[in-house]
Length: 507
Ligand SMILES: *[C@@H]1O[C@H](CO)[C@@H](O)[C@H](O)[C@H]1NC(C)=O
Ligand SMILES: *[C@@H]1O[C@H](CO)[C@@H](O)[C@H](O)[C@H]1NC(C)=O
Ligand SMILES: *[C@@H]1O[C@H](CO)[C@@H](O)[C@H](O)[C@H]1NC(C)=O
Image 1 (cartoon, helix red, strand yellow):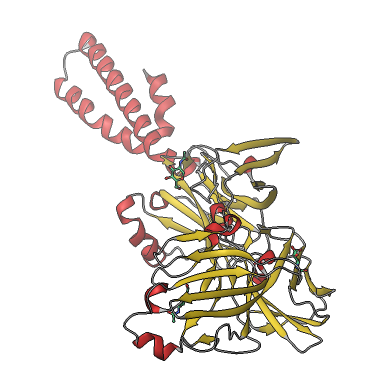
Image 2: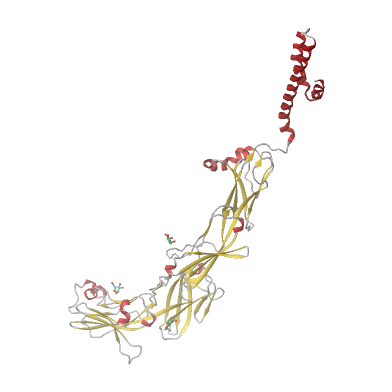
């Protein structure tokens, strides 16, 4: 299988440019040589047309019994040429076994006179001299094409992963001494110092980063002034998103830690991926394996409910083929700690402390009061400080000096960074009725009522007792008895506490 990542672009550098047409009826074997350059891994076309292009296009049909045979000459003069591809006049094709799937001529070759040989993909050992012999009823014509191959070598082989030193080198089949190699990245000449350095024409990238992706071209200049170039499209396998990603989660809520590759491993021809997460918590290492899924490039870790103890660094490690890459994701937990545990009494002083397990120094905190009805919460958040006089609080601690009924409901602490809102945590404030620790105001009303009632009942008992005594001694003044019974309670009620003891002794 051809690795898809090896998108090698064919760069034709035609040297002795020569149209190389054969004119039927012209002197036999009058061939002219041309040279074609191709990059290993891409395709090459060795041109051969019967007659000038303009001419053969207008032809209705070629002479009868036309056939073509492509041969490759041996590397040295004494080596016999060997057959590459043959199309007989009946259309029957023969192809050399070792090149079978890679070489072709157009199906319409015998009809339209395009006998060009296509090699796809080209290998470095394909370099050499090729010759086509077109035989027709009145003679034989030939095309000679020399194929030069430029090879771009990547070391270590693909996939290239982030931060792993990389060496790109170029060579070609041109048998002349090399004078100079120049490198271009996305069309710009690369200075071979600093990040990159050149070693015998090879380019070294010490710490490949995502910015090093793109097209890399080598330009080889030989002592005979021949210049050839090849381009390699470099893809670096790494992670999506920032290098140091931080996930903010409210204490008690779920968190998903992301770990996503920037490419599907299959794009590199890799079908073996393993991923695991690890976290060092309280001195012991926790490891979670991720089930292998080849149709995915995402390997998140789900935490159902996080607490401050879960905060910290999580490592996502992915093995792609023989390479292992790893990324750190930091979990930062936002927590609210109230100064009063449990239900809060009305009138008490409450502090809500918003804290973040990881502070980088650029965070801002904002407190807002959301109304308890969820449907209205958005509106309430906007209007709360106007209606209730609560300004958005910009410090991590919210102070409510005297908790009142209007403070019930949800309080939200949001954490903001330079890039916007990072996370938020909510606190539900519930208020219980009276507080017992502030006696004077709350006490008096109820106590006075109770005492008055008791006094009144005592007085009634006394009055009744006195009346019964008098009736028993002298029944002579009934009207006076009734008067006493009516006036005494009213008078006593006004004098209250002081009279309590005297009345009781009078009884
Ligand atoms: C001739 O055939 C080759 C491949 O066999 C093809 O790439 C090329 O475009 C053809 N030429 C024309 C002019 O059609
Ligand atoms: C160029 O390098 C490749 C890989 O190292 C090698 O296979 C090939 O034979 C070399 N070609 C020449 C002409 O040296
Ligand atoms: C693999 O990933 C695909 C796409 O993300 C998903 O639809 C499928 O359910 C996953 N299979 C398993 C076994 O996780």
